[in-house]
Image (cartoon, rainbow, N blue to C red; front, side):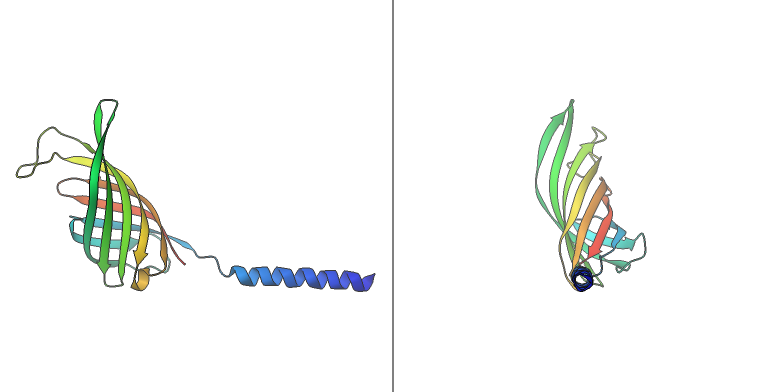
Length: 160
């Protein structure tokens, strides 16, 4: 009986150790902010908001916009857009995809442009990366301001 008990204990210990070894270390989420200026053809700064593997980075940002749709919500026009931003920094390149909702805050068109000022909110996620961003996943929420066009994405990124 003691032999069976000893074998059972050894078997449980072996299964437990194998499971722990296979799981590996859990990747830590790191909170970050990505600030963009003129995201169509401008600049970005990635700022870690807590310690982790990602470090501060900056560089250029370009974007591809999918045609926006418009919905009417309780009498207000809401423009829904899908953007893909490519951030090229000193530490690598990262592409993020975003869904954004934008509303006007004035009926007056911006002088020299064919649009009115507005604000937007959205959600984003990382879709690809190179260099320091090659194995990054995650996303978060975003805020936008039109003219001057400023955007900020905040969220959590994880190294795989």
